Length: 186
Image: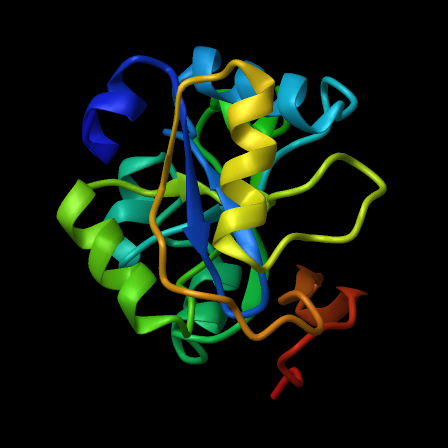
């Protein structure tokens, strides 16, 4: 099966990011989102972050186009910088929340693959909740194969490891760092 076929069937992609592999599903597809919760043993109701090739893909998810946080982020992307953005309506990956944590990644090949797919993907780390993120594609493949879930690994070799993306939220015009990560907030 191709990556697009796996997604269409509610399966999971393993995608390379700036630090580790992530788990990618269509953020609007509740079957894929549920597969991630099962795989990771992740608490249901905890939103999943997303990555997009460009602003158009974020707008297609329902990100509010006039949001101050989107304008702020746009001036800084692509980067390992995840920003909490308001949604017009919740989607499966937001777990009922009116916001989504999103980024346009610094990883050029990931942006290119997102462009080929034509839509954003979730990008939570590939690992059971509480375990270290996986950065070796063979380890990711073994973990996913043991799960019984439909999957496809977008193999880009071993990732760099290290810190995840920095996560921020704008509150009343102030930038609040929710997780210090790879990129400095500028």
